[in-house]
Image (spheres, rainbow, N blue to C red):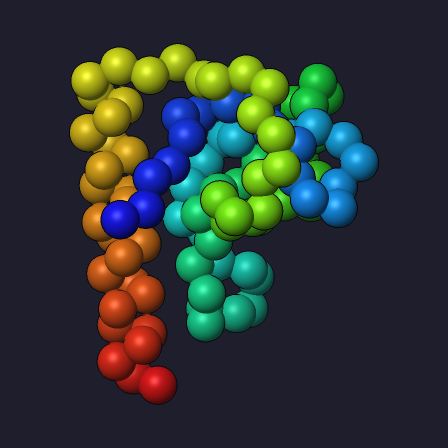
Length: 97
């Protein structure tokens, strides 16, 4: 079972020089629906400055955790829904291939 970090979490990614803040979940690469990525993020401390300045990445790409975003019961329930959705998409993709 997969686990996801809360929004606002700041991490470093393997092979990426700057820190990244998580701002969303479950994204496809534009024009490619063969893989759903766990997160969408933006540079930290700059924050969101445009869609073209965001990046998508999977949990396994995280090298270090610098700050854990706000988490409560509501966000935990939402994260579980996202995890379930990602797992369902991946199961369907595996069944189709």
